[in-house]
Image (cartoon, rainbow, N blue to C red):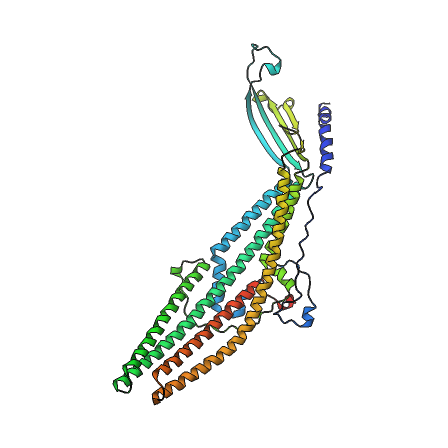
Length: 491
């Protein structure tokens, strides 16, 4: 009979709770649809065949697909080893990975809002009720009492209008954005290591060029000094030869300084102190890699920064739903079940059982009426944030298209420029040989020899700089298309 009475006493609360729970899940937030982007059917610089251009497809997110060791296209064992060391020890990459862990922890914490919260409590309460609250005279005896409690409490917010669900969706999108940003940091690190490595190799090549130039000018100075000693020429030629030798030596030292700085920067990318890192000198090999750009739709799929911008939009859209739900009632269901007694020894007796349904303070359901515009301001801010993220997303896409077009055009033009520069180097070298021969014959002055020698150095250094720029642009294009590629997958 006592159990039946208890059931009857809680029946009204149970029925009301079930009716309110039936409203749960009625989300008032806007459905998320990624904004459209005006993507061209093909890159202007890609030179795709008409058949390839007809195979354009809508973008499907693929930023999580492994790119593999894309730097292997350069076939350089030293670069392969450096990339592996950087991925294992770079501190910026570790910081990005830690941010992903933070976002995932926040995601799990937010998801916990969808579940009931259960807690247990045990302990005494010492209290004395006022005489007035008990209808006693002011001078009536009223001793304090001790009440022991052992109970379990449950609290739960019924998600009537999708506030909790929208908050969870936002946290999910934030976690996915952090993961995309991690991949973006990883791709940037790989590209920076490759470019840093090729910069060191370019400086090694320049250093070798100046070393050879110094040797040649040293021999030229010895020749001029012999001719001066024999009285064939004046002291002016000797002074000019010494000046050219010293200039080459000075520029060689400048290259050495640049090389040291580039090596130090590469060490930091590897997560190592510069004092403990060194890279043996080796000349830069000319890069001859054909990089398929794919289609603009595949670019949207692959670039992690674009994926991160899209996830930021999704999170902002979900927060609009949470801000909109603030205008509707909130239902907080709480309850406690356990025992209470004035004597510790009687605490767990059947007669000591007690329960509570509903909040201890306030009401079970709250309905906002007036807040001076605070909720409307929150909703306006959430909508404005979404508009900002949409604009940033579209700008990120536009920048991605520009970077690919820049890379494709630069590689094409650098290839043509390299051929022209090779011809310039060959012509300058022939002119230098002729001037040296004519100087020995006495038909030209030593100033002509110096000018021809300077031109050879200038043209050869220009060729080296072009090779270095081609390597840098090739890495930039790989970064622009989102990493490695599969020709069959990009078309």
